Length: 330
Image 1 (cartoon, rainbow, N blue to C red):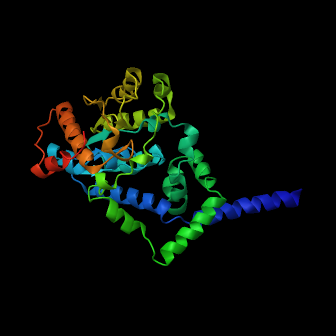
Image 2 (cartoon, helix red, strand yellow):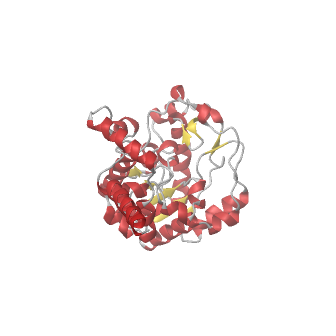
Image 3 (tube, rainbow, N blue to C red):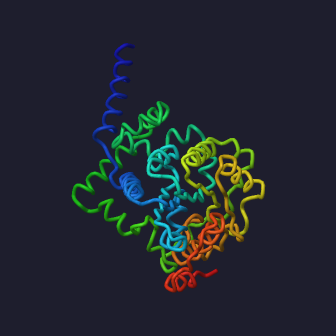
């Protein structure tokens, strides 16, 4: 029995050791890691007041800093990262670069409000932090450390070997992929209507979470704490709805619960006249991802709404931006 326990203990030790110091996924996870690093670095260099767009992939795909930042006459960073990255980690990464007078717009995806404590503790970024930033991982708490330590599987072991080989032989690199897909303000580019894959859009509506679930979810609590802490620092945080497929998917009660997450913590909240709902033809490959012409069209409307909420003068979009936006089907 002692020998069996010793073997189990040794296997666990080797497992954690390999994923902490040796194995890596430089393409799948490396892409996310590099994206976070680049957005954090640019955000740290922007002067205040500045605008930050913060969400899941709905941020960079469906919103444009090129449009919103220019119309509000503010330097802008589109800091949205794919859903699945722990919100506690994102807020810890970005928080130190936010200062008095800055504006944060948060059109967060619905699943980011309803995430549970267990889901957050086992977020995919845990594996990134375990391999590349154990100090930051430790600062998030023991639950996150344990979640990260046991988040990888045998499939991840095989993926690591394959990805490390691809990068070693210079067949692909995360930096090249990032450069081709994002501009210098963090917006997703190259998502034209001609290359859209709308077959990936869901065939049925997502479930509308109850207002009670939104109000008491762990994700909502993390967001609410972030809004309150930034408000104390003089940062204006304004929530909004993510882009969604028509017909309407969120009930008035759910929208009111999302609004309360921000307003109860001292933030603001805006709702567009169309509730950020668009027909299938406007999307690229997901209901959170508008094709670029529609990204520009939506961003013009968001900029106008933010300008009214902030009581800030709005500059008209350039003729070039209007021309691109006019090609959106809706």
